[in-house]
Length: 143
Image 1 (cartoon, rainbow, N blue to C red):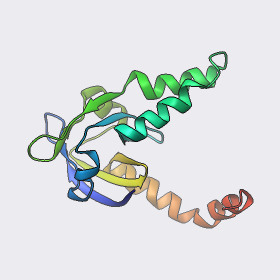
Image 2 (cartoon, rainbow, N blue to C red; image 1 turned 180 degrees about the vertical axis):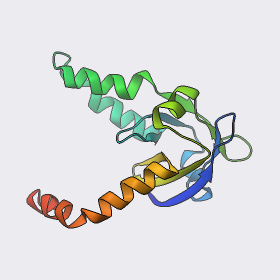
Image 3 (cartoon, helix red, strand yellow; image 1 turned 120 degrees about the vertical axis):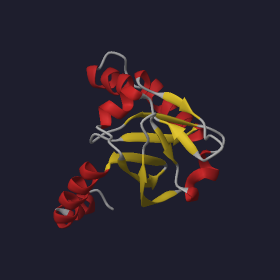
Image 4 (tube, rainbow, N blue to C red; image 1 turned 120 degrees about the horizontal axis):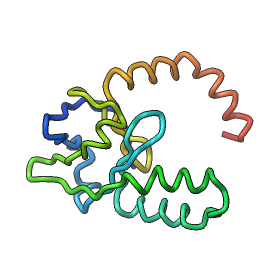
């Protein structure tokens, strides 16, 4: 399970160190793709396969199903850790997420999320402000 929040830098070539805590989990390779809320998702190969299976059974006739599958698959790339524990974030994904030099790597259960540091700060502040309302809505779902 991925948990925690870590600040890292991304270099001009798009290389970013994976937090040491997570390197073993992604040492067999991972998949990076567009995420939601203007971040990137990084899945282990196993978690990517689980997601792919779920998406493969969505109805092709529904536009939202097609759109979500395109979002996840069209921009996806296999990534491997280099000898320094870094992954290469492709240009188009850095642009999509608005990544600058400082990034946040957040562990979110079955995936890592990569955020531009300032966008993460804004998102986190809003979520913390709205936490009571969010909790009430989740309670209605039995959580």
